Length: 445
Image (cartoon, rainbow, N blue to C red; front, side):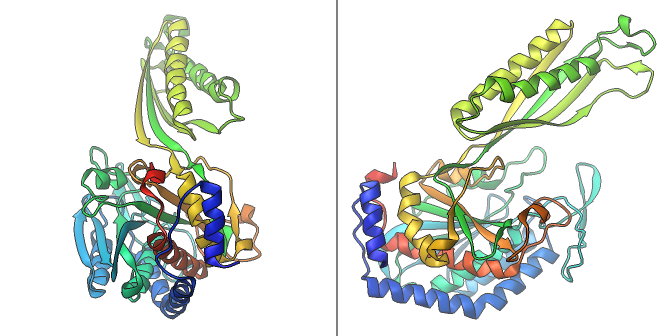
């Protein structure tokens, strides 16, 4: 089936009017050029990735990373903006023909994780994080994201004359979070106007996945990654000698009851056949000595949801559960909830519109509809402003068992670098195909 035939099917499915600005032969030739250049520059992309991996930087501290990215974009002749949302970099490519504006995004930051593998380019970087000495590691694949987008920028620049519109290459800092008291990430980029001047019509991003086989793309319309909110609960009781618990209002026992009560919110109060939800207590602190019942205990945790209605309901029920359980024991509970990240929501019509491009990039048999995950992504802040699609590209060696692969955010995390070429090609395909066949404005609301 030709690209135009596939686009016709997409038109029927979505009710959109799509008027291609290139003929099938022209589009096919552009795809062939992208493939040829991806093969040619793959070794360079792998070297970029290894350099970033060996020299990782935490959120809002990606100074050297940003410098390397900006140098490359400038060498391509792009208009380059630096210092966006502290350390972010934006490159702007204006095509040879007028048209809409599309954005491609990669995140730049590493994690406070000490690497534990035998890679010759493993990170040896150390830092202080939350008053603890830790290693710094690209334990989620952001090093590959940077390299893939740098590669896509080089490919697309070399095809500038055949591009109908403008492409923004957004290299975003602090996706994993910012130092205490700072702003950052996609939210700050939006606040500073990264989606304007020129105004972006659609945005695309990919995330490498260590448990998805190389050569595979996974996507899901609507909610694909969860909202992420942090909570803090302070339980105040009455201090007493550990030998005389009846003289206390024991905040440790109350905390245990609250933790048990919280677990029933998802398991017994939410309609989880509709969407998944998670409440996790990640840390609990209280007391200084074995024979003293403390006056106060503090716990922190995370709330995840796949739709905004459920997100709000979880907030309400968490607050009520903690406060009432504490009150039943004569203690008090103060609940603070900090919203971190909205649902990563793939625009339905745009996802359907781009599906033919994904199938051309990877082969139809390698493009798989997947289930939502309860991990979170601040790419969602871009999607709140413009239609966007976020998908997963395989980074697991072929034939491996995904259940035995080290997970993201762990010391043993590893990626098969051969998966980056498909990531590059997918970003480039989505950009040119959207620009040459954009959604109607009325359909992008």
